[in-house]
Length: 275
Length: 275
DNA sequence: CAAAATACGTAACATACGATACAGCACTCC
DNA sequence: GGAGTGCTGTATCGTATGTTACGTATTTTG
Image (cartoon, rainbow over all chains, first blue to last red; front, side, top):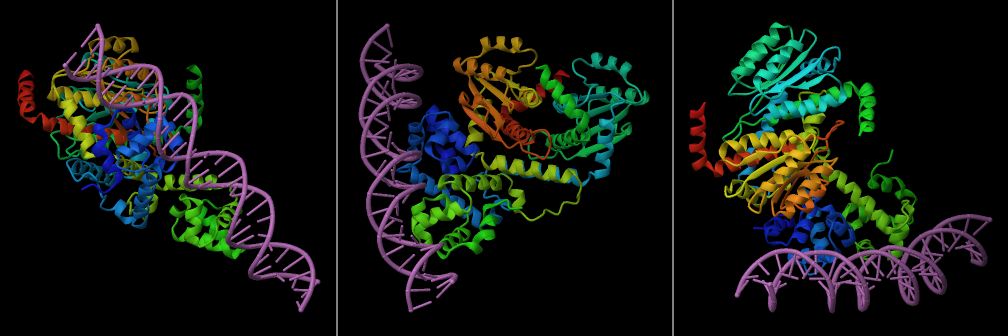
């Protein structure tokens, strides 16, 4: 049963030629507003010609463009009249396999943040934004990309941010640069990696403050960590989900950036000039 | 402060003559859809003549009717993009600074998945799980970690998965290994990177099927992409959020794994033995 | 109550919009 | 490798749409 035009499109997008598919994609991406504009604007946004747009709507089964627009408007009207249906019960075109995964992920995030106090986050932000020391980031097998992601952003708003990559022996040697004023951000979810635990322990002994991103069962590194962020990771999949930790990381990135706004802005401007 | 057109109307409806007032009332009653239709339809619905409608929009301060319609559309676009503002205050326990960020992120995910059909995901999964070809992954400055994350997982359940890292010249040379049966997964959100666009174009010319993760404004790479995933990225922060794309990536990882379960399980067992 | 001013609709106009015909091009299949 | 098919963009056309001018009706004011 096809009720919305969006469904209709995704149903037939497979059988469309390249140009019309691009039209379909831009419409889905800016649904449905692009479709309410003129053919010329639509075609420009999609990067195709006007006739391609018209052929596209014809393929969807509409006699002409105005008829297509009317259908979009009717759909919008229905949506606007029952705002509840959009938030609760997403009339998800996806009754299928993705929905439980998404729902679980959203729950994980809410739960993760529920156990996270503002104070805790503020403390971590203050520490990360304190530029008297260096910041090191490292992750495990699957979580190292999160460390990279965070490092890529932090390195822009402040100096002395280092992502520890490559072979174990390489980053182990970097311990020599770490001291009391420095921060080490570690991502470690199960199955926890011995190498990371040993690394954390040594860093801890050197007085480095450790911020740990882990799952709800807590990596053994939590023993040595000054701050522990425990994210929910359970989803209906063969793998654990790092999405909640990812969002926490983004939140911290945003907060640190805001904290350093004054100096950060200047720094960002300098960086722009360097290009 | 008057922000919406509806407010503007109720502000000035008092000083309007009878006919224009009827126009105003019908617009408010069917807000804003009547305003998106033609002058003739609007006038018929209000029971007045076309010129009255035009005088009405002129009194609101618009130069002409299309300008008025554009304003309505912009307003609608803003509403549709942040459904949060329409749900009444979620009872967030954390009243603090993190909450808006989290709420925006959750909305982004819901919106992103709302525009994603099962069929589209299934097509991508089928392509990624098709082991007759190779899978390459690459990302932009901030999104490359997502490519890494996805590669790390996919590489476990199937052979011939490669993350393209390092200098541009290095991965550009890998093009020689790519052909019609291969898939290239690209992450590119604004500001879009020229090097990636060029890379995608060349790959496309070689017949490589491209799966693009981008933001709602669509990277120029969408031109060449077989599948486009447009994630919402807007959050109250100095940075864009890649969290929605991250969740889509995890969803795909899970689905591909399930698809390959039979062979994958055997493969995972072998990997375990190798340690 | 009369005269002026304002509001409204009818009808003619110009523009911009959607529609169509056609030619060039790429790809496929024999 | 060549004929054929199908897709796409350019250019042109007809028309629906917004706009304006003007005459009539209605209200307002002295």
